[in-house]
Amino acid sequence: MVRIGELADRSGVSVRSLRYYEEQGLLEAHRSGSGQRHYRESAIDRVRLIRMLHAAGLSSRTIAGLLPYVEARATTPESRARLRAERDRIDAEIAALTLTRDRLDALILTSAHPASGCTWIAEPSAEASAGAAM
Image (cartoon, rainbow, N blue to C red; front, side):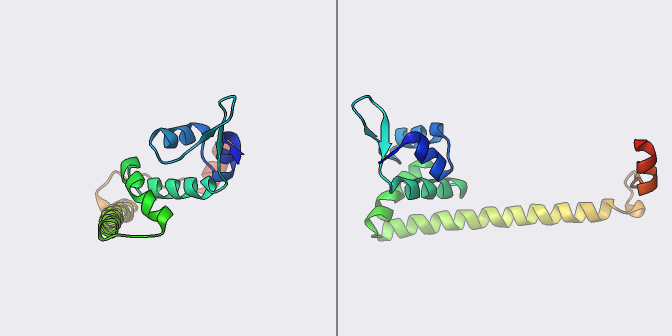
């Protein structure tokens, strides 16, 4: 068993996040006689998984619905459909971000030239920068 501070350190999340995960039903704590939270060693991997799923944009509610399948190492047509739907959502976000990045690249390229029609301010030369610093 590990205490909440140790779990936070070993899993890379804050104590506050661990309490939130517990409130959301994503993580189970056992209480000592004095009320301190203690977790099984397996909670470290579970918290890392929760973090990964949150980072991918899954809500706590969605994660809570998927964790029983992960723990049981079993899937159903419903769980596979939910996972595919989340993957498709992430793919759409990646496509949108890629488009945004490509548009920014085009703006950067266009604005880097005096002929772009933008008010163009030349990059300071190394000598001018060095002189201004003195």
